[in-house]
Image: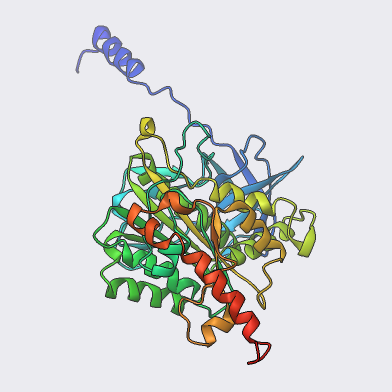
Length: 403
């Protein structure tokens, strides 16, 4: 019979006590009270943050938007039909972030940064929150470097600089996306990373855009963020912020990025849908009261940073679709007031064969000649005046041949 040794038992017990893991994981969980139309109402998440990512069953993510007295209303970024009443919801304790960095270049991703092109996972160590405060006045520099679009009419008369926000506005089928794609293609061989954000577009249209960029060898420096018309409204809502976060990564490390939002009219519609489902009070045209802030906080993130912060830039080209040429509608006037100028496209000019169908009289760049090289400034200086005189004479010529 083996002899029991007290010292050995003592040593084993002491080792067990020393190696005992005392850490306790505490998860704050809640439960779904009701779900429908992509919105879940959740009880029990008392310390949740606004804009926090929530973990729901079936790999469906939630975004906490309404923090009410006894419940949280969250929009679901996935198939909400899989979620049912009583499901457990966990906090992630982090604001919604997307992967950023060089690994995304040449890829097509959704609003959450998940691959949508069957080229495998996006492997990166860098993540940026989709919502960030725009750089302050002290952090910025005046816009002085040109961003060439490759379209002579724009580069000569409505120059765009690095760090500027230039709106492309016009009716449907007037060549708005064509100008944006030409600008991306013109950056080939340069140092600008392009991010094209498709919001609420048909899948076939997005596929055509990607095909065009591949044909011109432009996907080597382009990221496509796709939120199609069949995607839930919350994914369409976060897509431009995700694209902007990807562009900010390059801006903050001293490189140059160009973000195209195609288009912000559909973005406002998706936000209106979410707001009405969250029972926020509607305002003009049923848009919520903060629809101006929706776009201003996005476009203000485009900036040319000063030398101390690396001198990087993020240029924004938002697109707005008008109805029957009405630029005085609610969303167009909002975005015109936020941006540093607009390129106005007219259906009449497009139909007469003038491409790009740009109305030079209404189009303007508030940066102007500062964003041009000296040679271009010298040649294009009198061009706008000559065109204005031409339009004046063309208006007189309508009265008859006797003038």
